[in-house]
Length: 157
Image (cartoon, rainbow, N blue to C red; front, side, top):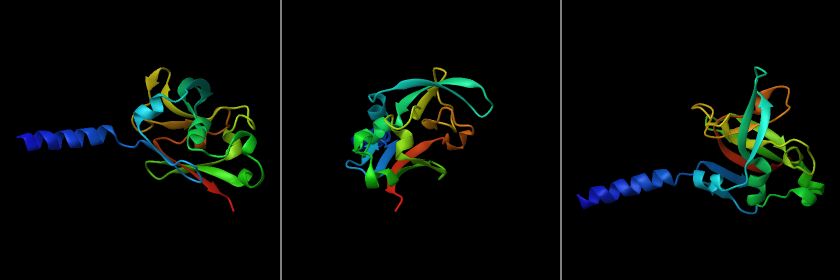
């Protein structure tokens, strides 16, 4: 009986400690983040219109904060060869989108691209969440990738 309790606890605790987001590639510190890790990062709220033109309030982490945490070259260091780095964001189903690093950096862009975890005060629905990229002011939301699992930094060269 004790063995079953221990086995149950190991399975249960490993399920709770699952990586929900991986940040890898050209980073100083690869990250395997759990939901609890993401909860403590700086959050913002933005308004953005979905593909039907309906405006929603999204809450989440600016992608730049995840990159900073991973030690990606940003801000004043984002020059020279670092300007040819890009961010590849991958979903659970294999869908991928690409952003040049300057698109994500507030020193280069006026918009804040976020890893959203809620919409209009509620968790993102199944099939969309738990995390989604939201790109305010884009004409088409093709890069509003759902079910985000991985962010990879690469050189274009």
